Length: 211
Image (cartoon, rainbow, N blue to C red; front, side, top):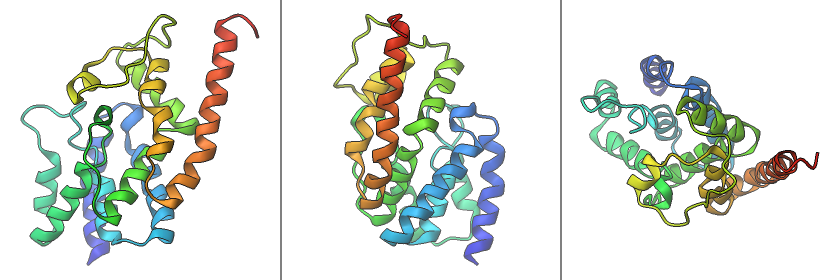
């Protein structure tokens, strides 16, 4: 039964993600799923809830949804789940997004796993690629030397910002290593974080004309 539910959900959401830009496309979902599987092997958790939350966590992202759309709830209602299972999936999804650092904290192992899995895809080599893909889709500058990273933001301020992609590293991406919750997520984040620091150092050298 669980396999059938996951297969049905995958079919429904894939069509939606294929309309998003490369930073939040179907490949993003596949990577987050692999991260979640890896973490769950060591941390436990209900795989049905974890996989459904991964599949659905971005379908109603405010960056992409139209006012009259609610794909998350629409798809959940179409799946053969109990009301309790639907509520648990919603609860997990609610705590995934960064929201400028104003997000709620997950209170279940499933929520912790999915949030760490998603944030791992926001850092390292793939995180760098995604950041510039999203910035390009929004017409943002690659970098702005005179720009100051914001330390405190409301969700609205975070979502409506037009800061450069490199500034986004200091407002979010470089903060994520310390915000990992699971032991597995923390371990996986270390190397990815170091890679971003190395990239930013090289970028600074090149833009300063040192290399």
